[in-house]
Structure formats: C-alpha cells, structure tokens
Length: 228
Image (spheres, rainbow, N blue to C red):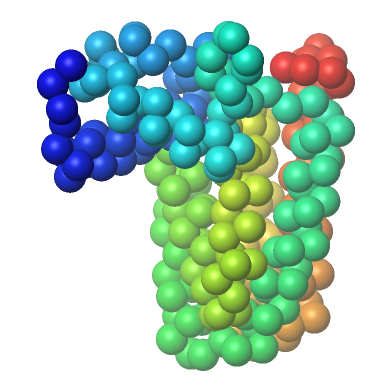
C-alpha cells in the first residue's frame, strides 16, 4: 500500500469523522447498524486507514462501539442508559447554567437572544430538523460558554452527542419544538437577569422533561426497554 502523507491522512480522517457524525445524527445510519470500513472507504473514495481512525475517535465520543471479532457498530442504548445519560446531563448542565448566569454580560445575553430569534424562525417556517438541531446546539453551547469551565463543557457535549440521534424521534411529535422554545425563552430571560438559581433549575428541568418524553415515546412505539 502506498504511504499516505501525514497531513493528507489527518485531513481524510477529519472528513470521514465529520461525514459519519452527520450520517448518524441525521438518522441515515441508525442505532445498532454495522459500519463496514470497506464500504465507507468506497463511498468516500479514501483508504481504510483514515476510516478506522475516524471510527476509533467516534468510539471515544460514545457514538460507536467496537465489538470483538465483529467490527464497529453505531451505539444502541437501552432505557437505563438513556436515563443515566440524562441524569448526568441534568446535573452538569444545571451547574454550567448556574455558573454561566453568574458571569453573564450584556454581550452574552444579546448573543443568546439572537439565537432564540433564529430558533423561533426555524420553528415558524418548519425548517428541516437538521437546521433546527444545529441552532439548538449553538444555543446551549453559547449559554454555557460564560461558565468558563472547558472540561465541564466538554463532558456536556459528549453526553449530548450520545443521545443526539434519538432527539429526532421526539422532535417529530406535534408541539414538541414549540414547547422547547418556551423553555428557551425562559432560559434567555433569566440568563439576562443573571438569575443563576432559576437558570440552573430550568436547565435541570429541560433535561428531565426530554428524558421522560423520549422514553415514553420509545416505549409507546413498541421499542422495548432492552435494546433498540
């Protein structure tokens, strides 16, 4: 095999990583699905080495898992795991929200308000879910930015990504995006006021509701509480 220059290998690995994340989050590659390195390499027109590196990186992010003698698969979560992830998210996001609200500036609050308006527009115009989801991530990342705790923010992002492919299932329910927007408006209002206690409480409730509603939806659709 011809050697691949280091910078080209890194570029190919980054491209493969970004493509796989997009496919997983969009639902094009679903939970439990096998990820065949040869097939992915053929689709992207690159060698298997950067594909394997990308898959290994996704494994550290909790999006895929390597099964002995079987290869890589998109992670599938059972109900207990979903509850566990959201419980951790609720604790960490409440802490991040509390710290962020204590340190918020007018510039921070203005940035959050602009994102709320963009989210309102996305909901009102029935924009595709991918666009809404990107704005939603930007809203929460910007909200927590002023907490100035990079490790806390990194853990929140990893936990969020672990369940991100499932949120599409809940978002399809009538009125769910509108309900979420009401919570975003409340968060923005109390964030501007610097009401750390209220922001922390809203962050915790935001996670708790999503967990309950998502699990009810999965169970209501006949998805048993083992693996899906």
